[in-house]
Length: 319
Image 1 (cartoon, helix red, strand yellow):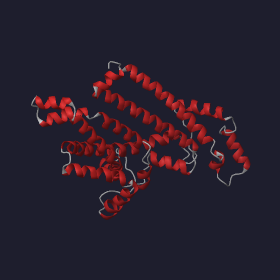
Image 2: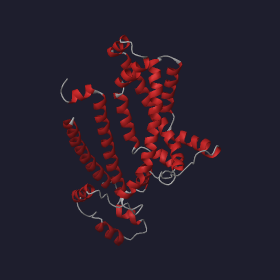
Image 3: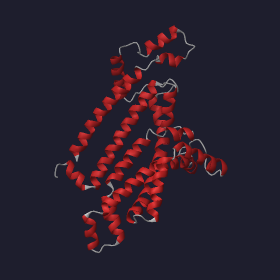
Image 4: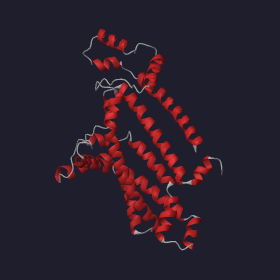
């Protein structure tokens, strides 16, 4: 176990290094002087030249990269010229928003997917199975922005149950905070539900065909124990992997939902950085999101090894 974790950490460091190289050099060779973008079109040539020198943009690219990398190792991602604040502070301030809607969305998607996916596999070709397949198709086919607009019009403007924009921190008012994230979380959950439901159903079908299921039935175990303790446990590997990938994707893939509901999360930061060509902010966001994805996938892999002893034995070379 320890050897596997250490090897994953080493490979993660390599991935982060490669991403840092690509992120820095690709963004820095984009046409346009960052100093000019900061000062605007009304700035004089002298003002642009002074800011370029103060930011070190007149140095060779490899020197700029080494300086940026050393600052990054010290968690100094620079200062955003759009917001005028440190990138690290902007990210820390935005994390609770994105994490809140991502966790709530995945909780909803996981709850529905495991219930309907399990029943659909047990009752194959039943009404519930056909209903689950319909949910799969709708979840994949319907665009998130359309669902979001429908929710805003119906639940926010017509019924006035939930706010249509903004975010309330949980430490200020728990109930209002919950209301502010319900609609965006449900929209995100619908987008992830189709894939997760299909994986749960197919994994359960495969698990039900295994020999240990016949042995459990021969022993005369109850249906609940057979399906939950044996079938569902044997079917957890693929769904957990997908859950980890989906949650990691949501860490930086909430741009559409956060824009529709005017939430100050990481997605909005990414959109702002792209729109205003805030290279410093964009570099910091790319590195943070990449590190988050790597960390989440590592945790999921370790969790799967504990749940499925066969994978643990394979990693240790016992099979």
